[in-house]
View 1 (spheres, helix red, strand yellow):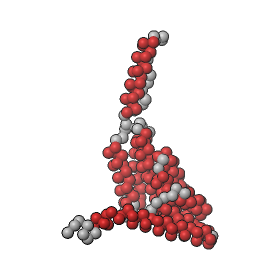
View 2: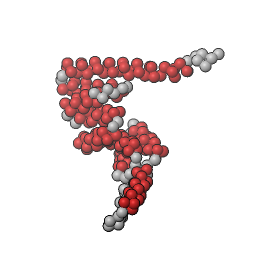
View 3: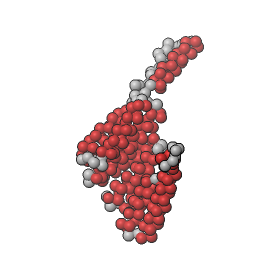
View 4: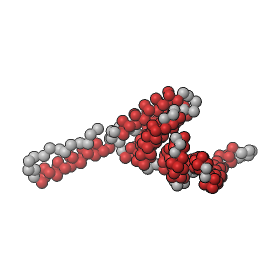
Length: 229
């Protein structure tokens, strides 16, 4: 939907007519601003479809999953060319970023690292436009993986470190530290490798502790006697 055009005015409107025209323009614009080409349920479904594609990639032929991922990404690109509320735009950019990241990962696995890098850069742009640190972390990890297997080891280190600077929690932080260690090891930098491995161990310990604390209420609820005699 295009923004509303200005209401035509007389060549020399008087004060009362000018005030009336301005109020009509405000009402027309408000109607446009309130409209959206995507709803909350649709956004939820798009994110669910993205998770399904990621799961499918673990057990199905890559070419088929690639085609379906590309189709969903293009659907979201088309939505972003339309009009929606700013918060909905951010959610669409987030989903588009995850899909571009998936396409980057798949492209690398299919032996196309340069094409994968292009997808990775677009995924990063989406993460920036969405303002989404979790997506930023995952994209940097994906791009580090692509650089590593493309032989750009220093780039792999730089990307992994940029991801770690976002202080990711859980497995993302562990993966980034492992990726940095792998790249340093391939470069033959023993001291840097040991330092990265130390961060891996520390991050892993933090992830385990966080999981233990988060799961404590569930474990207590399921423990013998928790429900009474």
